[in-house]
Length: 117
Picture 1 (tube, rainbow, N blue to C red):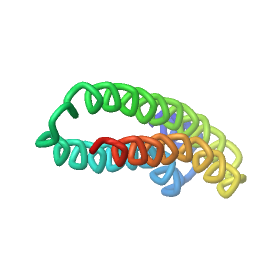
Picture 2: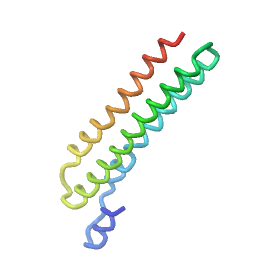
Picture 3: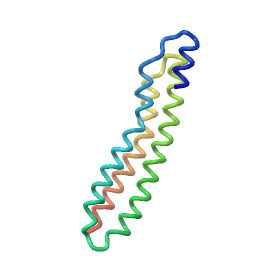
């Protein structure tokens, strides 16, 4: 929003590409939802409650922190793209690296969930 404001204040066109930076952290919601549904499937397994709770807390923290930092990186990318109108691919690559933390968290949690009989 601030980047668009700067563009409007300078009578420059506001880049529509900034929406890709703004929307990047939303994928973490999908990863959390996938884990939630798989954990709910484990609720019928005897003794799975506490392990699922612990996994859920740590997975939520990992995915949530990834989203937080991806949002911060996205805001910086918006500011830079609006100011220079250059570097779009580099900014997306940086956001993808932060995204990887959430993907790894989901995969490691899925592996751990598989160990719960």
